[in-house]
Length: 356
Image (cartoon, rainbow, N blue to C red; front, side, top):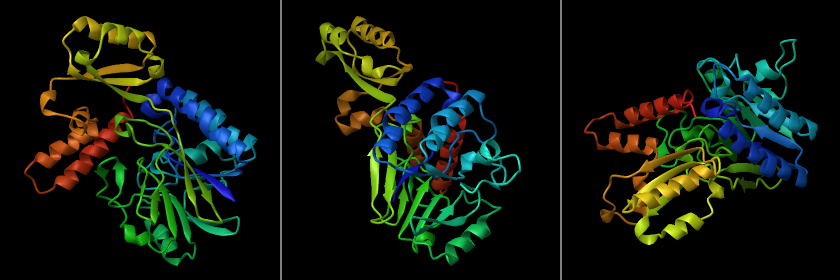
């Protein structure tokens, strides 16, 4: 059996932005569901954080979630399993009240068998799998006991494990020690959006970009083969964040005017100024971008590019999280890791109320 694994879809992200909704919908319409249909994939596991907001959901977002994801899986006859992630829960210390149960359970109040707010062993194609939801205060003892006592070789969950990258270059200093999961042949997880592994724990990464921290970081979903234990990554080729390096010493007005900018439609553009000697040429570029209906344009300048080349230049147009981490690293304090983690957490939470 081949199982589709997807995680951290974050329906309603960026304050229910319709720009991001359209971008994400393209992934489902052109990549995810066509692949499932073409390869006759009949089982799908979502490893948590189906929705973005913990406290409430926008009705339009709910409609998109139902019609463009859940309903399509059911209509295709896909056996669907959803593990509860931290963004799916109302409270931080318990999974009892969660969006998936409230939105999709029947009125008898019973938790549907395909929802996993608590740890549970299941069998797919003869393979025992431990489904592990977000570990919090309320279920920590139950989860740790299940991990210790299970004879399942495979774990799928929404885990926070120390030492793994949350985003490129941003590591987690909190969570469960990695050696807790050494007993499993494979522990596959959502939660951190950057794809990484240590040969035992596999962070699958989310299917599409959501913040500038995701720039040029590979996104997609996975196919897990229950027989061979192979984990194939199906890449999402679509990006919403783009950088343009502007140097009018290497440009002409004609080249700016004739360039095809249609690839940037509904995208977020960061223009990195290398040399800007001709304001009219630069304004022409801005005008051409707005005419193809970009979502947003930001400009990064005021640094001495004569001192930079190659990778150094690219790093000057960093995302907010990288800038915060570098600032913390420059401080002469003892608790750098704790401060860095706090700032990253606050920044991530701030994105949930950002208007795009």
